Length: 504
Image 1 (cartoon, rainbow, N blue to C red):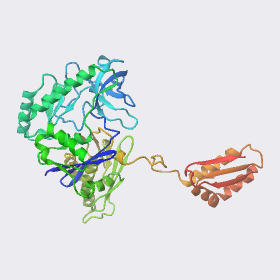
Image 2 (image 1 turned 90 degrees about the vertical axis):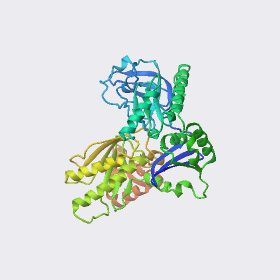
Image 3 (image 1 turned 30 degrees about the horizontal axis):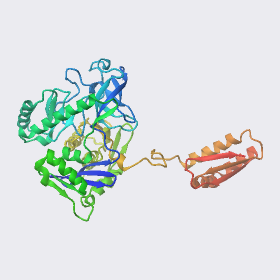
Image 4 (image 1 turned 60 degrees about the horizontal axis):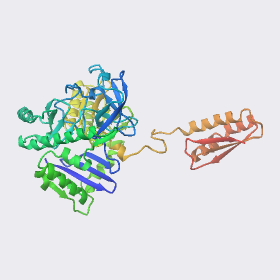
């Protein structure tokens, strides 16, 4: 079935939604002043080489230095142990996984402090971590990805038919540039050799321009900036001539048409201007999915629900029966909930673009065959995802561990911000703990003070109410023990966890 790409332009933001079979499967946001840097190429300078970690830090002009693992450094002979020749980059995924560095040459043989290197952003900065860098430059075109530093040819894994893969591999062998290798993207399935020639010529020329600029700048300096969200989505997400693009802004429409005329001329008739009075995202239900994507609890149609919690180390997903009571035996009820949850979990991972380590706590199933059914169902759903995933069997504790390739922050971070009141913890100290802290502070402040002093306690309204109603006897003992007077002052605007004790 044809897919629909919706492009929405706001004064300060671009938003893109991919509709597949009537369902919003992917969402992307980009602030006009905070464009994604993934895919950008920089002339960088090595500022530190860590032989013990087989890694280096490279200054590229960003807020933090970038991280360059030895597996992401191109070897002189063009051979690389970390590049999968049959893997089409999702977005701009390039290079090796950070893991054991002993399968590579010592990094000190490849890089030295102060050395100038041409690097590409493989992963955007996340939290306190700088950008992940690679010297394996990857230049995506409409149908091909050109890798000038790697001598490999590959066909996207998403093209399954063996005969078609063999045919396309033969085409790549005839089109292979003198330097580097190629990966044929999913959009190239069924096309002829002539359809790829312009892509190869354009990407070779682009690489020559990048090399020339890289040699003529003083690092750190941006050498090549990838296209913005709108054009990147048209290039990467349109897979067939039956797909459509709908745009609700004249300026964005004009940019897309110019881009398509140059790289996808037969697709121009599939671009439409949204001319309805209704907001486009509301009409297609995208706004509702955006609201759901920011919620911790996601309800299932049966009455069960899943909880999605993100931590610094991993994302935890918990499956619960909720209001669902089932129709047959207990084990079958649990399996039905888990199977329903599998579809929603896979959908939410893709929609929210959650990456890294993910742990799913399914409802415990006694039967190993049922555990296998749930795992297989999850693998089938994840096969629809462009991002690469790895899934382990369900453990004896009923937990399933998996990873999903992460290139940028989850859209949840664009839709939410840490709570200013609890500072992102998700909880506050209990009222009694705070009241006990005030009592302890009174003892410390009045101990050794002269008799007749006044101790003024300032606290938030709920705390002062608790002190007066339930800690009156304790405060009276303090006054008697130290010959002092305790005044409790209500400060409604004060943070509930803050208080002050002043002795005068």
